[in-house]
Amino acid sequence: MSEAKAVQGGKRFFLTTPIYYLNGQPHIGHAYTSIAADVLARWKRLAGNEVFFLTGTDEHGQKVERAALDAGLSPQDFTDQLAADFRGMAEKIGISFDDFIRTTEERHKRSCQALWEKLAAGGHIYLGHYEGWYAVRDEAFYGPDEIEDRNGVKVAIASGAPVEWTREPSYFFRLSDWTGKLLEFYEAHPEFMAPASTKREVTAFVKAGLQDLSISRTSFKWGVPVPGDEAHVMYVWLDALTNYITALGYPDPGSERWGFWPADLHMVGKEITRFHCVYWPAFLMAAGLEPPKRVYANGWLTIEGQKMSKSLGNGLDPLLLAEEFGLDPLRYYLLREVPFGNDGDFSRRAVIGRLNSELANDLGNLAQRTLSLIQRNCEGRLPALVPPTDADRELLGPVEALPAAVDDAISRQAFGEALERIWTVVRLGNSWIDSQKPWSLKKTDPVRMEAVLRNLHTAMRTLATVLQPFMPGTMASMLDQLGVGEGSRALSDLATPLPDGTALPPPSPLFRKIDEAA
Ligand code: MSP
Image 1: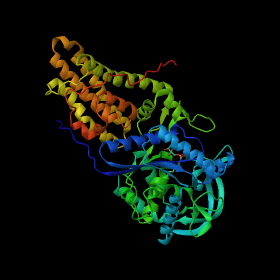
Image 2: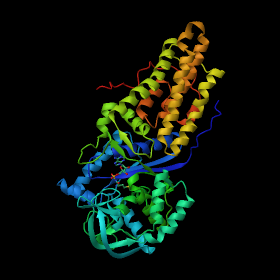
Image 3: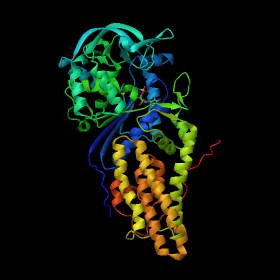
Image 4: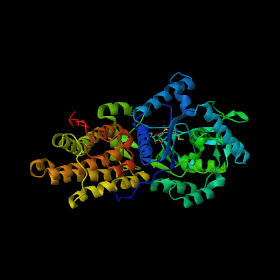
């Protein structure tokens, strides 16, 4: 039936979120990155790939240790509590992770130490002395030209985080050896970094020349001990980045999961690209491992136009938002409002606007009109499939082309574009139903009425299928109402028409409008 391009499946796909610092409660900024990654994971599964989707928590380092002290708890008790909150949040916002890693787990300590030993054996590590600026908030070292004075406080220019003068013995990674090799790697793998702004910034940073990187600390204890020199704990970023291979069983060469390396995609926030696009591939190459295939940096969310910050106390709780608007409208909004990769804003008015117009009106009404007409005029049974007319092709052509069009956008992490392509078909469905007027055909041409309703059903089935990754709960209900069984909801199932006469349950509304004034 379909001449449309098939979406390629059948591959392994390893996808990660950043692991989140446990220095406070999860907020909408964390949810944003995880939801985007989740949509991709679900899409890849829908397309028939074997997906391994990893998320988790970053639990070591000075930042977490200080937060624990402030809370009057031991770092272990503190992180145990917060890790449970982050995991709970991920589950409640529908993050379909296959593994949730905590960097305080034994498997991770083993993996970090093995990587260290591998780097040391290769001559990539030496003992020296670190003297310079450190920002605990960023867990990052800054050079003298990356610092400025703001109201008498020394801060990192890039992030505004206060810096402290640090002087201690430290192991170093010979990052300076990697300037040329990293630039060659970027050149040979144009897909490695996206969006373009990230690629530009990171390439410029490396071109300026890399300096050796301090990778251990002696001034505190909350970290993975350096093998053979327990006065040092590993730099938290070396520890954190290693999570991506720990989860695949590193250093066990026989681990079945190891077949997922290299990662297909690390999804990260734009402020942590230096760690993922510079340090991480250098560590991996030095250890004789392949670098990841791609790093995508998302932009930052503000709240009603303001930067999210602890002092403003405006780090919105995703669970409260999901209660207020519904989880799926929230997920939809986050990926629809802002072109992925750009900075964006979270505003209540904008969520309500999109919920009412795009979800309840455009999509909800199309489903409701189609399903209630089938219920009323066809005794609740799916009308028979008939050869399409020219008018039918105007609807069915774009419907059949939709999965490949969405796949193309999602594969570039262009989630907003994917939704726009889907909504082009939603709007087409609405104008098509208005032009075909199936409600007035019952008396004049019942055969044509049935054909029109069947085509609308086909369109709805495709729409609900491709929208599952974005709005899993609501689309499951829509597919129930469309009579599509749970085992027939993959992209490849769209090639098999539903049997004529399939009984459809009575429809019920899928989206609840919210009063804009409320
Ligand atoms: N622990 C490190 C990451 C280690 S990955 C090996 C870290 N953690 S974090 O909790 O501070 O931030 C993690 C991610 O949360 C950011 O990279 C970003 O993706 C997301 N966000 C946190 N606040 C955000 C916004 N206000 N807006 C959008 N995303 C934000 O960095």
